[in-house]
Image (cartoon, rainbow, N blue to C red; front, side, top):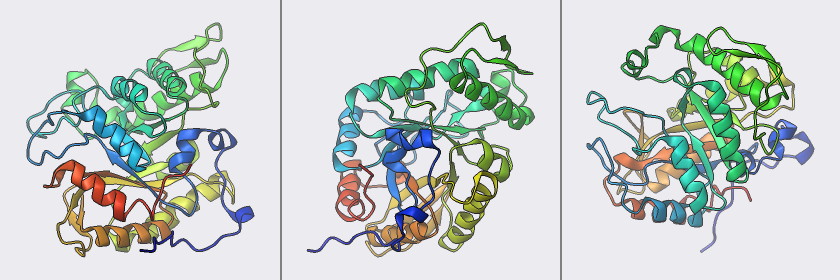
Length: 340
């Protein structure tokens, strides 16, 4: 059987958009994000548990190692600190940055990312130290997705005004980036303290910067995200909306950063793998259902529209997770391999 290759049109290498020089050197960023091509990742837990709030987490390390061996590009962790029965979902149970540190010791090449850390509820100076530590210990495999959060009940518990989350996101991100990218920085934040330039963050990011992408629009304008973040992970879109999403994002990046700049656009959401291989894209709450051929068609359209990565969360699927991995590895990953 002949294995098909990517369907992106041939492009001269000197005309391809290029990322920030710091990110070109970052192994994790390069594994999942390149112009004109799409890679596939998984949102944890690596276990199906439709209708139940929590997974069992049995065999989770072995499943992560299996996903890496099969060639998936990334494992993505969600940030859900508390159990809210109204949402009936606690993701992978463990705190995401602690969990990334644990999985970093059990894996070798797969990207470990977040979708995303709820930035307005985190102290950005400690987050900067956590991120640089994890990126160094994992040898450059961290991609930090940052969201504004959509669970209202978390904010009162933390004593934070829910309506302030957009302003807090910008403020926290400025502190986070300043500490990572400047030596002995001088800065002052309205909410998160400051420094007179007599203190420095250690360790430093091993590749100059920890890649940071927006997860959802985070209460910001697309223009602000294109200027300040290293990429954007949107929710899964219907096929007819892919082209407009891709054109809009990449146009904003070119306007702000320059004609040849590359900041990746990704998609993420729930995925229900249908028993019918020809089942086309069908919207479900928070994601989509498709058979393997329908998924392939959708990813081909996404790739052509300028989407660089898709993060799938198959927890809502009904078959065993190992079978899902095997089917995707046989029929999808050869067409959309991770970058070596």
